[in-house]
Image 1: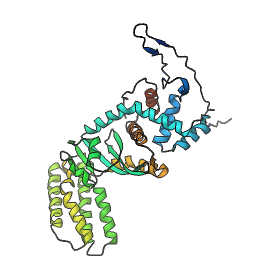
Image 2: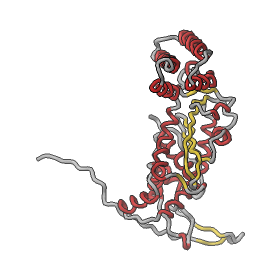
Image 3: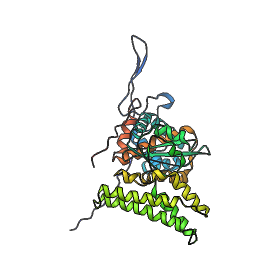
Image 4: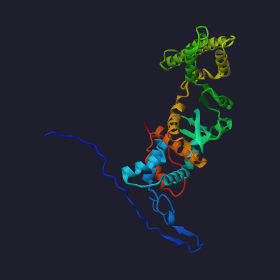
Length: 358
């Protein structure tokens, strides 16, 4: 006799619960009072008495905001997998109610980002009502905050980060970030290396000398960081090598270049001069904005799948819920149970997103 094992999903079924709710008035003030069961997600009665349960709403939130399924496909999954029929409009309104309850948690995440010692921002295009808006992301090792806003300027970035942010800002070369005057800046070396590689591919032999020298210099800086992390070089040795790299860079930037592409690269490096080697001064600081790039990549996929949001309220809902879902993933928190506890609370509340032990 031999054994065979098979892992199967049990036959799903929709559970319909009737809550018998006591409604009355206070004998003293005549104020209307209504009971509430701990499993209820809403106090609505009458024509709005039929509601989705917390497990169904938590799953729909993860499918739509976490995995990027449009409302129509989310409704199809719920119907085909569980026999739960719900309209796209009903899902949209339910998501908005979830976001309203999660608003305090979102504001708490914003405060955590503002108080973080190091933040990595990025932005990408987004559509709201068919108009061009921008999806901003601000990421730290523990928290990620998204914000869909109508512009790509300093005002929009400061709404999340705070105009007086004084930590490390690991960012790309977008000029807006340089306006955070209190921050310590680190320019993304990956962007610069990619720019050099692209220039080398299309440039002639003499024209390629400058981007090739910059490429070699930046790669040596990254190798120097790796040697320090492996205890192959002392802090004093790093300081001496960093000084030599900076001197080589300054000599390269003092030259006059006939090529327009080389002049543009040189001008950009002059603007970013003080932010190129910050990571060598501060052990542990990232040299690239990979964290924000990874956080914004799923939003780029979502934008390509269903375009964006139709209303500003939908954009706010998107910002709140994807921020919470991404932060839960970073902190290894069970998303479904947290959403269910939020949905069953009678008032909006701040979720406990303390990182779990790894």
